[in-house]
Image 1 (cartoon, rainbow, N blue to C red):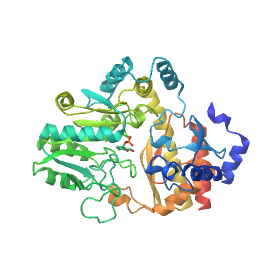
Image 2: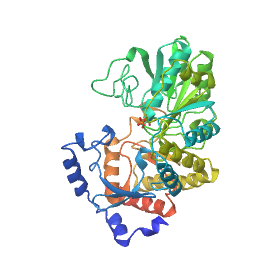
Image 3: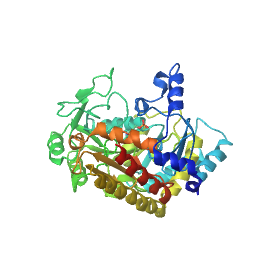
Image 4: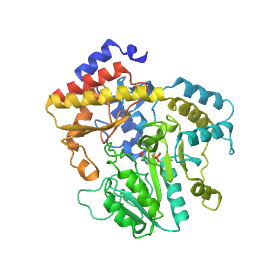
Length: 438
Ligand SMILES: Cc1ncc(COP(=O)(O)O)c(C=O)c1O
């Protein structure tokens, strides 16, 4: 078992909170000569105490350039649900690698992965593979517009659907913002086609849909990029009904929740079936795979003039890995084990905050949860979440990493099957020590 490999020195360093990251700092500065900002994604910039450089990973652990062992709750920003080195996935990918990498054509693993996907995902009569979640979302928007012959897309405050111009609106808007807020400099103003509403507010959505000109509604069916917020009772059912009534395509963006919160994603867990859904991350445990699936008549449009392309879509090695991942994740026992451990972790963290007299609300699901520091009630949407004490949470995560636990400073904690009881005990110990320190 990997956790028994933790050395006495590593445990002492965790307990003392004495981990340092100077070598990472030095290497980021060196890389910045050629690699803009020393990173390849803006979401890795500005991380406290510094963006880290890693040497290797194993199970629930990362090993960084300073020789630190870190318990990892980033999990590659979500994908690594089977941990960093799942033997079966690596063996499947390695075997395929011997037979070729990219055919520019179809492969057996691609068909097998598509079959498994359609068996597991409730809305999926038909599907396509893509190479990133952002691309899958673009395909969904194009399909919604073609199917309805309408232009307007509705998204929600605090929800993220990729970094492209037409959808990067109001992902973290300031409190009280009126109208869509761009997420990037240089972003083209396509706001006349995008409208932003508060999430978990059925009356607001229904009133807008009644006008009969909305092509699609896209949402994170469990809000996970900011917080880990479940839909209120009856909300998704109401959205489903309203979309059907007004002829609007309902898209669930399950890039985070898909294959993570259950074999059928959020739609399987919550029992509400969208018309289309997008997937990525946990579907392939670190390989670059995304997908879109949905109603046969809408998905079939990609064979009737709606262009969906991508050189790397369905790459054979990634497809072999995807088959191995999906076979593991369709086993209810795998999900049940994660649910039990994650519940203990969530409850332990909440108890540690309560004991320290530090206001916080731990929300979400065992496989992905969030600590709303400074909140006293469960948030329902971005407006509620916005009231959390972000500065203090950043201080918490920046201290926690010195105690050996790496958690995202802007949001959710991701769990893997490799976060066993020893890892969870060590995490809870680090959380308690961190709270005493700050
Ligand atoms: C809900 C959601 N949709 C879309 C995306 C974009 O996916 P990608 O980063 O693979 O382009 C993300 C990425 O974090 C996401 O969380």
